[in-house]
Amino acid sequence: MKVSEVMTTDVATVRPDQTAREAASFMLEADAGSIPVLREGRLIGMITDRDIAVRGVAEGHGPDTPVSELMSNDVVAARVDDDVDEVAVRMSEAQVRRLPVIDEKEQLCGIVSIGDITQKAEDGTAEMALEGITEPGGDHQQ
Image 1 (cartoon, rainbow, N blue to C red):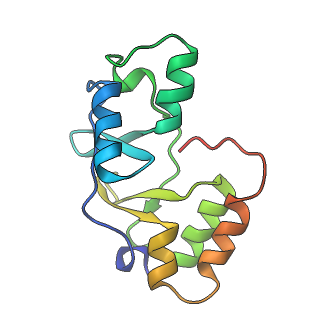
Image 2 (cartoon, one colour; image 1 turned 180 degrees about the horizontal axis):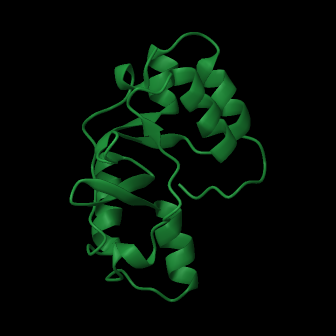
Image 3 (tube, rainbow, N blue to C red; image 1 turned 90 degrees about the horizontal axis):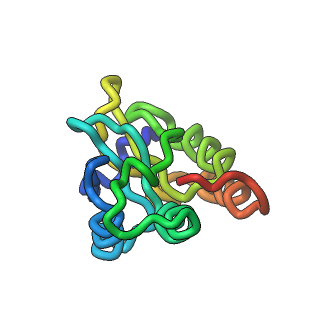
């Protein structure tokens, strides 16, 4: 099964010049802990609630700080034609619950979550990803 068959296509996004306050507002509205950062439709980063609340506050940044100053640039992503099992392994290794899904031009096509995989993929795939995600340690950058 391909990731394009299980991903969510209606994804809230932010631009790098938008503020941390705007990103947090989008996260609250979407009930999500991370939002892809796009420049002209191209994925350039991710910003998480942790980036805002922990890194931002710890470094003295306020709510009007541009997303570009707080976002993670090292984005782990899936491609639309990736196999769901491969994506689950990638999520496990990166210890993340969501991955942006991009096409060959790095344009955002959607986002895939553990929930998407649990609901739509074959047995065992979600468990494989969860094993690594719930393991202590790791960078947890998105």
